[in-house]
Amino acid sequence: MKTICLIPGDGIGQEVIPAAAQALRALDLDLTFVEAEAGFDCFQRCGEALPAATLEKVRQSDAALFGATSSPSGEMRGYRSPILALRRELNLYANLRPVLSLPGDFSQPGIDLLIVRENSEGLYSGRERREGDTAIAERVITRAASERIVRVACEQAMQRAHRRGTPPTLTVVHKANVLKVSDGLFRECAMRVAQEYPQIAVREVLVDAAAMKLVKSPQSFDVLVTTNLFGDVLSDEASALVGGLGVAASANVGDGTPVFEPVHGSAPDIAGQGIANPVGAMLSAAMMLDTLGQSQAALELREAIHATLTAGVCTPDLGGAATTGEFTCAVCQHLAHVESEVKKP
Ligand code: NAI
Ligand code: MG
Image (cartoon, rainbow, N blue to C red; front, side):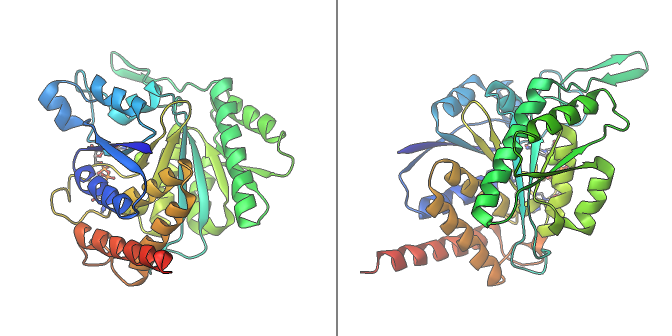
């Protein structure tokens, strides 16, 4: 039996995480769910964005499914984004963000790439300060974290090549022509680690060119590895090629309990309307099942999502008219159908 910690968070997190949990329950696996709170609402109620009890529940679980939380722009005393805190506390140093074509005219065909984003340092080091009218953010790049993330990317490239029967390729994305010292170190580490994997074809692309190539020829990418902020930006961009933020899934992995989360935020502009797209959360749940060794269930969940989209059922962000609830029911019906097919004598 596996224990899953559900952290809906704020805004549409409260809508998409219950939807993903409903799909997981429909799979009829040996899973137990515990719920925990985090986020801006939680901070306003109890003074903490990530209560110690939540962190403890995550530590006690086999995996966590996180929705989204609201972070006010600018300074807010005592508030720190709970997902950044979770990544730090659990040392979840790798953020895996797959971008895969979906059935529907909202998605381009033939895309199957993975962005491996460094999750622990870079411009998200939290080292920011004001010196009078000058503001400084420190972009921390270390050899240890750079080598570690490139190793994750190489392992992912090897696994994907094995699964897809295609040669592994790795694109190292950096800006070492300008950030000569910090990205110079990242690049040096990337090239060194990649040499340990002679089967992998390695190329390097400057981040601005990578942003353009992702739009122009997304089919030419396999695994990309990059630093924290670049990975964050490029993955939102890449999600637009297959339907947008509503369908983008991710995994935070490293030393502690892995945390799976849709890439999107709390979407205050649509929160509470029942129209949030749960696909990103559901595909994150599928990544979680893979990690828990439940690959067959992960496949069934992905197939049910694909079948639902193929039938033209989708939320307004994808051009459809389905509510979160209607989409989720349709996915669960497909899962029930698969179950009864399997159980037929
Ligand atoms: P956002 O991802 O919440 O929304 C961007 C746009 O995409 C909005 O128009 C929204 O309606 C749409 N969208 C996003 N997810 C969708 C879904 N599942 N279905 C349909 N439409 C969807 O990003 P935004 O507006 O920049 O940030 C809102 C809040 O979320 C901020 O407080 C920000 O700090 C927070 N945020 C939290 C993240 C997290 O918890 N991991 C990640 C990104 C932002
Ligand atoms: Mg982002």
